Length: 126
Image (cartoon, rainbow, N blue to C red; front, side, top):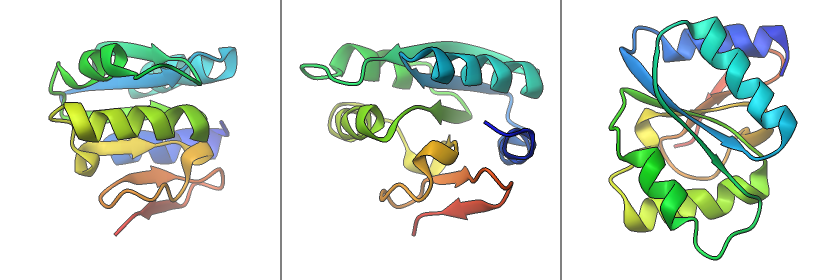
């Protein structure tokens, strides 16, 4: 994650009171999650990590959605996030309209998602 991307991500989180962070299990993704939490400086209700492949992602999806944060922030790989997002839509009250993704997931095709690119520009799927 670039510094410019991180700054744009923190700006998108904005005045949220609290967030939930979601990360892939990879060391890079987990490190990006820690950088996001530190740069934002607010209350992180939970950090949920998921594998690239899983039988259902149900346990992780429930943990991710349960705290009902102001904003969900995701730093993951496309393969792992695709499975997790599918489970979130099917089994939880998760809202893509309150979710921000990092550049690795730019332009993910679920309406309402927002995110940043490495150059600091932002996007929203309509």
